[in-house]
Length: 414
Image (cartoon, rainbow, N blue to C red):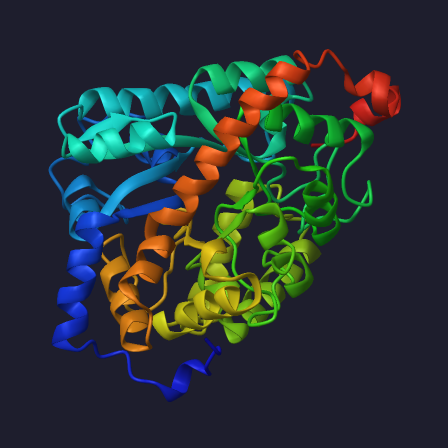
C-alpha cells in the first residue's frame, strides 16, 4: 500500500468502516506501547488514586479506564518513566516508585485491570473482561549501569527497557544528545544481550540512529520502538530512518507509531526544534525535564504550535507498513506524555477513528488486527521463546561497565 499525502483524502468514516472497526477491536483490542499516566499521577497527586480516580472517568489526564474501553484498548504498556535529570541510585529509586505505582494501580482496579507479564497473560486478561497492564521502563539510566538491577526490574514485571531517554547513558547514545559512543559501547552490547536472555524487550525509541542499527545487529530476538514514527515523513531525530525500518522484517520487530505532534507533523517538528534551540540558549536542555517542560509551555503560549492531525498519523502508519511491512507496525500513542495531541486523537478514545480512516483506505480486518495487537503479541511471544533458548545456552551476565568500557565511562553523565 502506497503512503499518501495526508491532505488529499477524507477522514470521515463510512458506516461500514465504523462497524468493521468495532468488530476488529472486539477480537483484537489495541495493545498500546507507551502511556505516561503513572508519571502524571506522581506529578498531580503523588500517586494518590483516591484523588485521581481513573476508574471513575473524567480525570484531568488523557487516560482513564472508561475512556480506555471506549477507545478499544485491551492492553497498555504503562511507562515507568523517570527523567534523565535523575541518575545513579536516585534514578533506580524513582523507577522502583513508578513500578510500585503500576502495581498499586492494577491492585486498586483489579476488577478492570490485570497485570500481565506474557502474551498469554494479555489474552487471559481479555477473556476475563479486563485490560492487560504491562510495564516498560523508559531510559537506561533506570538501571544505573547494573545488569543485576536490570534483572530485578524484569522480576518485578518490567517487560521493556528503552535504552535511553533524551540524554545519553554511559553505554548508549540518545537521539537528542551529542553522540559519545557512536551507538552502543561494549557494555551497551552486553545490556542488549542480557535483555534478550531474560526476555525483556529492547526498546529503540529515543535512541540515536547508530544505536538503533547496532542494537539490531546484536539482537537475537525482535526489538520494539514503543513510541516512534517515520523519519522520512517527519524529519525528527526521534523518528526511525527508512534503512532501519527496512531491517525490521529480518529481526521480526515492530515500530509502534506515536501520535506526538512534533514527531508526526513537519511544521510542528520545526516549531519544536526552534523551541529547543531557544531553550538551549538559556542553558535548558532536554535532560532538564521539568525546566524544559515549563519552557516549552511558555514557548507554546507565545508561539503557537502548528497543529497536527489524525491524517498525519495515518501517513506514518502507512509509511511504516510500506517500508517494513504490515507485520512490523503497531501503535504507541504517548498519551499523558505530551501536552498537545493531534486533532482527532486528543485522548485514548481516538484509536477507533484512526482505524476507521485506515479501513476506508483499504486495510483489511486482518491487517487492522495485526496493527492493533497481533504484531506486538507476536513479538512478546518470540522474545519469551528466545529467552528460553538463550537461558539454556548461557547464565546471567556478571559483566560490569568498568570491565568492558573502562572506569572513565562510569563518570559519563546519564
